[in-house]
Image 1 (spheres, one colour):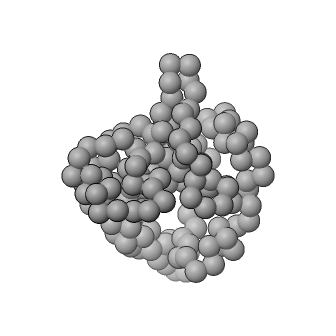
Image 2 (image 1 turned 120 degrees about the vertical axis):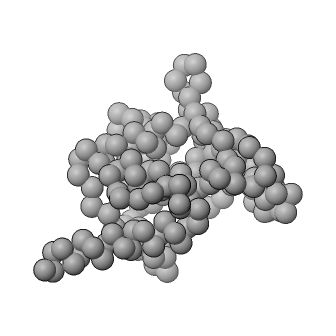
Length: 165
């Protein structure tokens, strides 16, 4: 892929990617502590992007998770890909910076752009990503994972109703 060629180099057998963004130290920590959580919530801190290679469809890989499939046009998909690509911090040579290997499976952390604060969380980042892909979502009101998922559920119902009527 032209936007993220390093992913195919790092994850040679991935069919899908799980992508997340969060506070750099807390996100990478093998053991989450109150100190790390407090720092993440109350001080502007550096961020990391987390990529997990998935070799089978997400619903099979995450059988107990709620999965909401989103259909994207080519333009919407390209916009989402650009949003994700722009999240990776790049040095003066345009190279992404590896952090530690991930916490499970075939995964990797990378240094990301943006500051993590109590008002700029992973859920807000996810909502912004969805907005970049043309979803009707207000990122500023999406502070929890449930609020993001509720918005997607509502859109899914509206789409189903449109096709059923």
